[in-house]
Amino acid sequence: MQEKILILDFGSQYTQLIARRVRELNVYCEIHPYNNIPVIDDSIKGVILSGSPSSVRQQDAPTPNLDDIMGKYPLLGVCYGAQYLVHANGGQVQPSNTREYGRANLATIENSPLLKGIPKGSQVWMSHGDTIVDLAEGMTLICSTDDVKFAGFSYEKYNAYGIQFHPEVYHSTDGMQIIRNFVINISDCDSSWTPDSFVDVTVNDLKSKIGDEKVVLGLSGGVDSSVAALLLHKAIGTNLYCIFVDNGLLRKNEFEDVLESYKTLGLNVRS
Picture 1: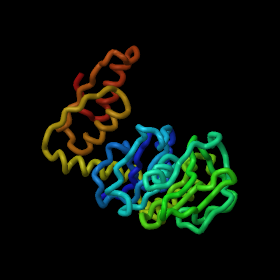
Picture 2: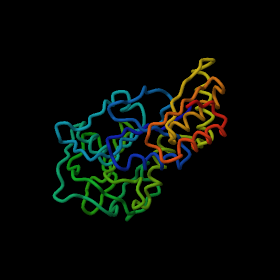
Picture 3: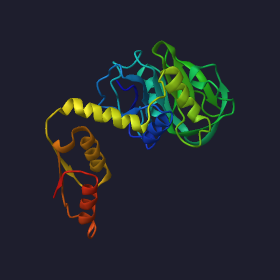
Picture 4: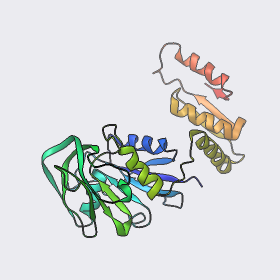
C-alpha cells in the first residue's frame, strides 16, 4: 500500500505548493477538499490542513470532520488550518488590528519536533487577516514573531501542530525544513516515492481493478485525458478504446495533428 500525506484543501492559493514541497521530499501526497475526505486507512501517515481565504469566525466557515484523524494521525494546520484547530477546541481567534501580510522573523523558538533545526530569526511568510489570541487548553506555544505571539503551537495529546505562517512558500527561508520535520520525522514517511514508482503503482492498481474488462475513454486532446489514456494503455493494452472528440475548440488543423500523435503512441483511437 502506497504511504501518503493527506492534504485537506480549504481553498488556499498555496495548497498545490504544499503538495509540491511534500513530493520534493520523495513522499506521495494527495489533495482532497475539506468536505470530501477520503476513506482514512493505514496508507495515510500524516495530514496537513491548508490555508484559506475564509475566516474561522464566519458563519459558513469551512468545517472539516476530523473525528477519524485527530489523535490518530500526525496533524499540521497551516494558517487557516492552525486557526481552525484553535477555534474548534476552545481557543480564541480574532481579527488582527492590521492584516498580517509579508515577511516576518521568528523571535522566539521553543524546543519542538516541528521546529528542529530552525534558527532564531528565521524568516517566515505571513498572510492572514485573523490571528490567534488565546490557545485552547492543552496547546503549547512553540514560536512567536515580534507582532504575532502565537505564530506556532503544539497540541501534544493529539500529536498536532499549528503555524500561522506559510512554510511552503519561497519567502519562508527554512520552510522546507519545517515540512521535512513534519513529513519525515513526525509522520515517519520513508521518502522513497518517485514519479516512476507512481506510474508503476497506478498501472498495477488499474490491472487489479479492471482485469479483462474493456474500457472506453473520451479524449479531449489535453494533458489530463492523454495521461489517463497512456496509464490505462500500459495496464490493459488493446482492451482500451479511445474516442477523440472534436469539440470545436481546437485550433486549425490541431485535431488532425493530435490524432496522428495519439496513433504514434500506440493508442487505439477512433474519432
